[in-house]
Amino acid sequence: MAQRTVGGRLGWNGTVRTVREISSGGVVYRRREGTVEVALIQVRARWRLPKGQVEEGEGLKETALREVREETGLEGRVVAKLGDITYWYTTKSKRGEPVRIFKRVYFYLIRYLQGDVSRHDEEVDEARWAPIADAVKMLAYPTERETMRKAVALLSGKLLNRKRRAARRATHE
Image 1 (tube, rainbow, N blue to C red):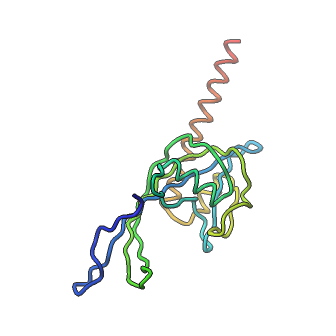
Image 2: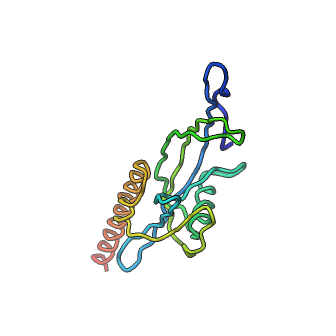
Image 3: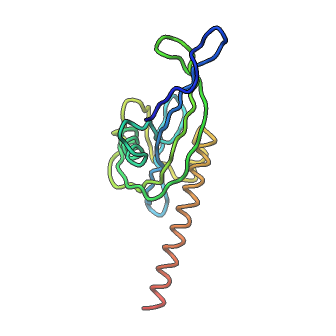
């Protein structure tokens, strides 16, 4: 279940209903002309990572891939888990009552397979590829910047391991 109420309604004692949400998303990457690029989305003038709520019967990886496809127009394959972030925010219910949201978002590193960033959905103002070093600076939220740094470290390690394997093969030939 992606959403669960954990508090009471706003009442005579001033309590605000608290809802827990679980979301999933990803850092989609590709290598292009010697540079690692990642896909970012812009919503209300803020650059962020694609993510969204887990739907009934859906796993975290499935959600990440679906949300990436919907919000960026890209399809990919999960290669690693990057971790999760948590945060609080307040919104209003359909009846106008304040609701406090506790959100946990699980992020995955996703290798780009196909698609076009121009095919993003209407929730997103813009989707674009950016060099990974620029993307870290572009992201609006510190927790997402930290997630991107984890992706940088993981991709650097993968690239280094690939070079080591190639060097070993070359010495054994």
